[in-house]
Length: 227
Length: 361
Picture 1 (cartoon, rainbow over the protein chains, first blue to last red):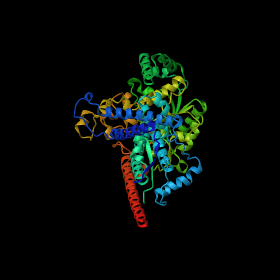
Picture 2: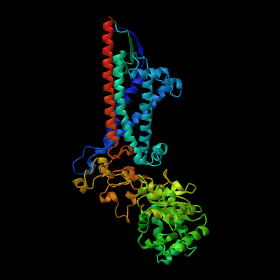
Picture 3: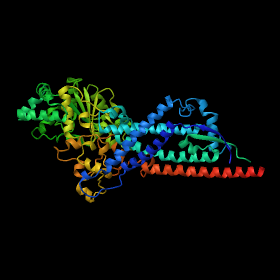
Picture 4: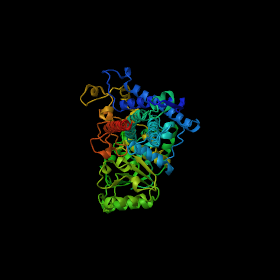
């Protein structure tokens, strides 16, 4: 085993907290969301007043959704005002052609086994940054906007209905928006698989302790394998 | 055609007492969601304002809107309600026909230029110059443009005129288009539904007649008084929804008990209409009340949101056996398979590199 030559504090506490709250909320929202779309359990015949089968699932979905939104906003705040070198999306510049240039291509080639040596990044590599932008930033934004628009349907003219209700005509109808919200929910398990795989693989290949870094905050640089 | 008649004149001529007339005004104000203090305004308008002339055109449609309209529920004035607007032109209901009738339409357009309401039932065939809908010797497309030019406002009756309905469902062979796609420069009130509720229809006309303006419209151009909330929000089976008590097939015990139809594909949670408030045929019932899930007939493109009896719609561009969950499961499976394959290649490469290193050593 290579000796640890450097210990780098990459993920500060706010980032790690955000990560785990986000992970919990995403799983909870996915499960409760699927249940709301296709409720499995049926209470026995009787008076509706004794059961809260659907309302509990909906309540959980909304509660986790608001935590998810608050957590998302907190992460945006931290990126903009946190002064955190690794937490401010600093390297992500997709509007600039140079960002798509050499570092990005090298990382893609490495993932496609065209290049043999792995580029090494302390924070996110360019491909990871792009994936997070698409899945986590755009995906979550869409789920939040569409979710709040549908939440606002309960109270026409209320805050959510006024500020997010424009999503409904944008998608044609309330039904289409529900459908799009449901379809988009599936990007999160897809992301989860790719995320876990990439983390474990990088840990095995680069031995940077990336897996434990989201608990401890520390990544490591190790000596080349002694030959 | 008697001109310059007020509604009150008509009611009197029809033998309706003052008491019944006031009842009608009060009921209408309730349906419109107006405060009791507005009742005198309605009475005043009904007594003093000249009847609003209406030209009622029929395009690609089934006449269910007219059928609904003539069943407005206030008993003694049922016929009069049908007379209360000065329905100057309606090719389905007029006594005259042919050139005479078309002359009446043109006369009204001239005499009440910029003042008449154009009510349109059905939508417009646009393909091949509109030959798939010919009325009175001309295409409906031309007739609509001609008649809309001098109208004060347009009422788009029903799902057809508002959003397109079955005519412009896939694959839309006649190029059917809702009124708002054809006429861009006039205020349009959309009164969707297949058909709309009769009281909603008469309510919209009364509002325009009373105030001379369009009612408050929502983002899709529908009057807020009737289309502000979903069927679901006022559904009498909502308690069963919240309790998670669902009908699972049309012959189970839960059907008999009147449980929630959500799992039977009820579109009530996504449909804006007044069915669960006003109901149909004078408050007799409405689809959910009769044990049938709402099909969402007042929502845009409800025919293409298909199957009526399942909750999750198909994904349109991927064929008829796909829905969001099936696609999601396949995509997740593909991601997992991709990750596994990538891991395998990584392992092979690493083993190779390792053995090469060992060889070198």
